[in-house]
Image 1: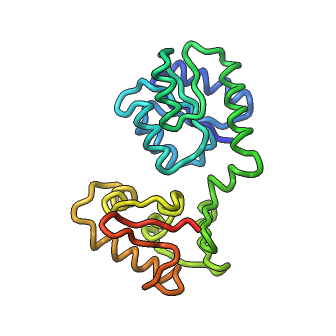
Image 2: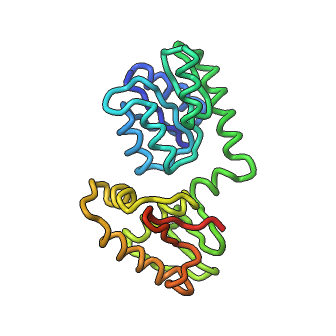
Length: 228
């Protein structure tokens, strides 16, 4: 399994890496929240160890951003011991909290506990790779989309849009959010660009694109994939 260690203190990150590798895990490192998010785009990560106090993007902001698209276990790490920081970390999506200085064996035990919980009943595979609503299924590992068992062929941009919405079924994304997350750049009047791609996706996944079952518009707000 792959674990991402995000800490700007190189000595601490290296030490955690050694302990985890001794347990048989593959470890990726990041020095700040921005690097952590980039690593998630490049690698399949099963658990994150996230420090709070870091440059560029701290652990709190990074966790909020990560939780927009990922539900993998996240253990928050910080030198602070105040209850406020622990409560804040847990409230924004952290699954556990470890205060520095920590016993490496305790950290390893918490890692194993979170991974056991995550992989119970095969939930890891479903959360990490396969997204389903009704008979619309997206397998992100194989980059395969099917509707009623039949494969659907999308362009790379169309795939990214549908993947974003299917990872968060029921959640409405504004046109600006979709553009910024898919194109990775600020949006400037993106309405026509996004609308054209949405229309093309509907033509491929809907029986009747004019009365969509899956990819729906919320007028004045944005788009969502219906949770069925």
